[in-house]
Image (cartoon, rainbow, N blue to C red; front, side):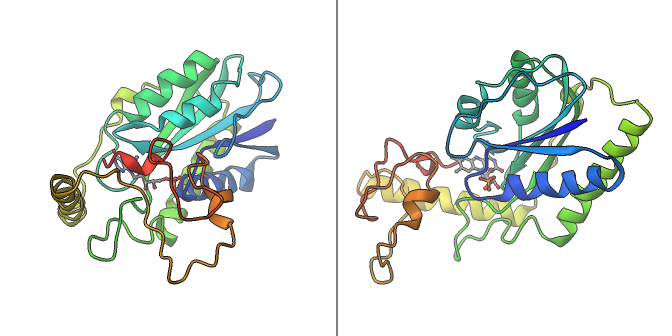
Length: 241
Ligand SMILES: Cc1cc2nc3c(=O)[nH]c(=O)nc-3n(C[C@H](O)[C@H](O)[C@H](O)COP(=O)(O)O)c2cc1C
């Protein structure tokens, strides 16, 4: 069996959770892993067989699967291949993300046989308004590994079967995360009123040495070669949710 690790993960948290799940699966199942990283480019490969398994991970943006993840993964084709969906969200809410992922991946030929939402540090977390800082932490990753072990158990018993993601409901997030997120958005709205601007990451020119690493890390190529100018129309940070 081949185990496909298909991930879109601009800040690395979805990929971290997917890796922990895969460690759990591989602890008990002999398989070969094929990694398809959709963070910076569209991913392609031969049609994925129904005898294989795919772990598909992506962040939640605006309560849905990140649309750029769909754009980058839509080049894949599967043949009734079982998949495990992993939505990683910043402790605000994952809302409809798993249903959205399940529908999208079904259009590619995957069948959802497992799904989970995990918490990752929110991209809008700041020192003043921390949201899920340091997540996934050690215990999140242990939990992800345990989820992988459970998938392995089902594979061994040949009992991995289609599931209905609408049965997985979002939980109320901790009040502090929600309050800090709301406070971040309120500050943003206030600054918009004072001087309308697009929200893009701020470059700290006092410490930037124009090494260019940011250019290679940015998934949308929004940063210009000077490492300081950011094209807000390309920047995903521009839509706080
Ligand atoms: C444009 C944008 C929209 C987001 N929307 C949500 C959201 O609706 N709910 C939530 O809890 N977190 C939201 N987040 C936070 C991300 O889901 C979270 O930071 C995630 O861990 C990022 O995954 P990655 O590290 O794999 O890129 C959003 C982040 C961005 C950049």
